[in-house]
Length: 222
Image (cartoon, rainbow, N blue to C red):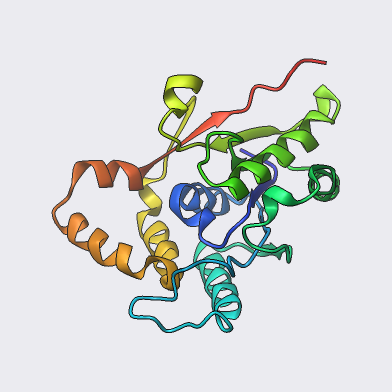
């Protein structure tokens, strides 16, 4: 059983797709989960389907959706870090690493979940993951928490191999789907199509919902 899980992603909804089942599972087991969300996704282009947000109202709507998603999962410690969407790649890596080091020192997590730098498609994802790795790499080896990374670039399995952590979250399917639905300005269209595929019991989709996969980051020895 993990002592404390720290989830670090840059955008509202990043937690929903490949990690929400794991978050729900840990909370159900009694493990505290802290979610650091770096931005409010205010530069996103989706305004709902049909549109119900404007560029001016989008940050507050994304904030409310993130809070609702966290409520669905039972997250008690949601930290909205106030950085600007689509600029994480331009932030000072040392500043980001220091931000994460402070949280690690405060929470003493046994497990951190973030994106795998270089294999997570979006520049904000990669920069976030790289800064987390930098923060943990700077720690003495004996004190480092495990870091499980989400990767989904086309070449991730070719270059990283198959994920070494495949977590069965089938008992938490409803929470995972409700978390996705909570981010409705971003997922309304997706959920409409997904519900039809669920009714058809589509195998690929069911496997995606029931099993979440991660790569444990291999830190350099020192």
